[in-house]
Length: 123
Image (cartoon, rainbow, N blue to C red):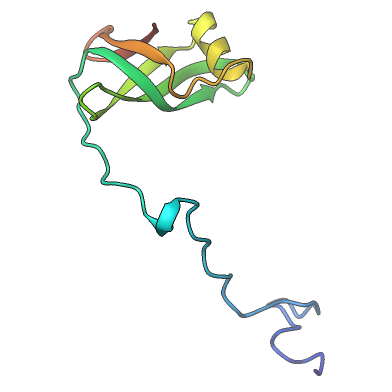
């Protein structure tokens, strides 16, 4: 294949093995029979009560200290809800980030904090 072929030349004229082909097809899920996930649970914006962590994230400041966290939780009825974690809640931030325990599927409670914010309390 000549070096001037489009597969070898990028936009700046440098030579290299660049492909114009798309990436491979996505892998099938590991679920039995290739089944897909079920429907997305509805979001309950006003929920208060027991829930389990489905997902979470911790936001950090430029200095590397935690600013806050967000919990995506499942309620007993199967709906989703969101709850915050205060950056100064050292015990909860440590639980989410230290790697000693897996926070996903752990129990807690969603309570109303200042204003209309939902907050997570580890149960």
